Length: 471
Image (cartoon, rainbow, N blue to C red):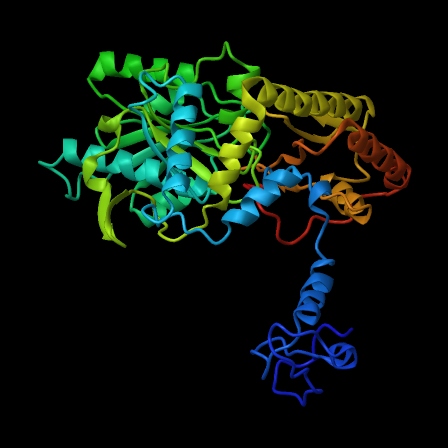
């Protein structure tokens, strides 16, 4: 079956099936269809034929289960899929029409507030979002508005430009936030083998115009946790010296669903009074298909009331403080299903297995001799590695290209300032990436090394290489 016409223009068409929309296809007519690429077809086709056109083209995508670049969930139980299918047609914003879906969202917020040790989980305020990027935007907006209210006597003015302090390893959504909402991004660069935020350097960048400091619990660059408690301590000392009181946001897109189960002794959450807000991605280590995220504030004081819109919509007074309006309720229902299905012990078992796979795989890669590990997967189940000193015949980009030939999607990228000299590979171990699949990965990596060793020099870095895989 041909997928497309060669031209985007209005080329002559073969005959279409003229059966009604719900009718069965004429098998001969269905086989002869050749829909255009750049415009709507002139008429309908059978559901079977439409499915085949879409399905066949999507076969050319990579296999999601072998995608070791993405943090996003690529496997859920069949029952979760059924729950999502039953809620696909529900609009999350129609809370009066779908009150039980709205109730499940509230329960998820309270469960997360309890998991993250909010002083009073019932009083914590939060919402679901389309992902962590939207959640981060909301947290940044709350920071800016709180700062603006405290500085109403001098903002807006030329000398009062708000700034946000973060490491250069932050997810790209924080740079977008600063761009979109006219906030100066003050970034602490990487230095040597420190690949994330330095507490003292962060505090040194703060001044009377700093709206907050962003910490990352699980860097996308190498899987390491930033020292949230140390950052808060440095800001406590800053307040003692100068009176500046700077709040902290924890971008826990991945780590906020790992640390509570595997690193219970680590203090990073609302137990630290300076932490005003936390976000996570339900569709990452929250174990739900994309896209759902969560944004939580420790109490109502942390989220200015004027940011909460109360909309008279479809017969009810509906408070909302998300950026999106219409969005599906399926992922929220799936998040609640996953919380019920696993509980704390179940989450702990799933995340421990992912960490075990990561630590095992990183150890075996380190033993090959051709690679140097930057991290080992013992924080996030994520690790980064580069070629070892003395390896001159190939580089990480060669490895990434060759592994793709086997179906494995392993990102190769350079680090940001001041470590642009460092290029790495990164592997994300998720639920569904089993020890058996890790064995197959190692077999394929070991099989291509003899050929790579024969190269005289790397084949050349791609012209366009992203600084990181941020998703």
